[in-house]
Image (cartoon, rainbow, N blue to C red; front, side):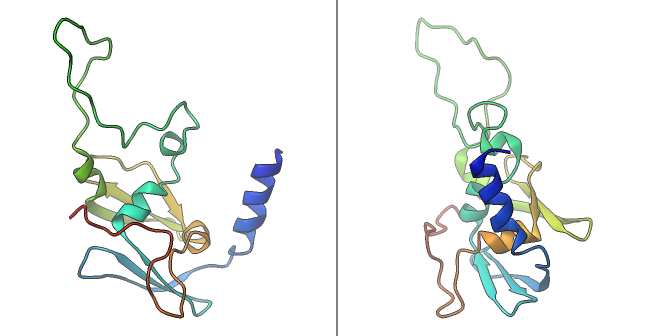
Length: 146
């Protein structure tokens, strides 16, 4: 196992028992989670999408692709890639549905149809963008993709 993979597994293992006691929507579309260790986290839609753990978004199957916008075809050129254009970037940050995955995580369905990321509770706890001191997001952009 490579050193980065080992470090990530060690970081995740500290949250093996992480479990939400409550989960709720905030008015701006963010997700609030109260954890069984007493912490409280707020995840904006933008933050959650940018932290999608699926193989495509992480680049495991090549360069990350789910948030790339299609560029218009130039006059006199031809498209090598065929198929429908990706949904606009704004739709990529709209949460259409949330469903449980076993008893260990949740899966979001995004406005562009992406739904392959399984957010394990221990992963969500690890990437928590808020601290309990002021409940304000840190290391996260404002969620202006309404």
